[in-house]
Length: 175
Image 1 (cartoon, rainbow, N blue to C red):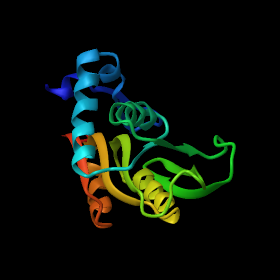
Image 2: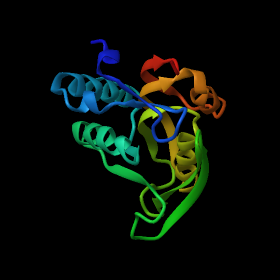
Image 3: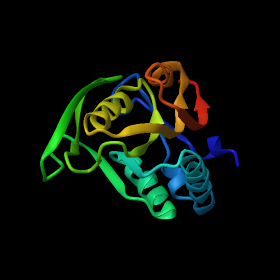
């Protein structure tokens, strides 16, 4: 399946000069969505993952579906102020500013093998911040999976330097 047919490019969102790569057409097509979940699930099975972590918000959709399919627990990594219990926070840089991610302190135990899932990897800031949170809890990221790798922004290369295995279902240039 050619997933590029299901990626919508939205210019000047969320800021002028940014081209937002929208995966919601994948979510809106049962065949494309099922294809993504099945492919990502196979990668997770090969790595013998014990938990799935998903990054807010589209990483929740994909990650929760993979966790359900594999009968594994799901760990949400959320933006600041969204988690109600004791948590760790991590500030990170986006391609258009800064943000903070949080994770519940009791969501991952030492030694658990984690697959970290998001819709795309751009500059790598979100993925690296999530990895720091998971590592702080004692988890081991065995795999980072995204549907899209925006290769011109170099995020996957930054993540590879941390010895994280990266899988992207497709690679796209910025333009």
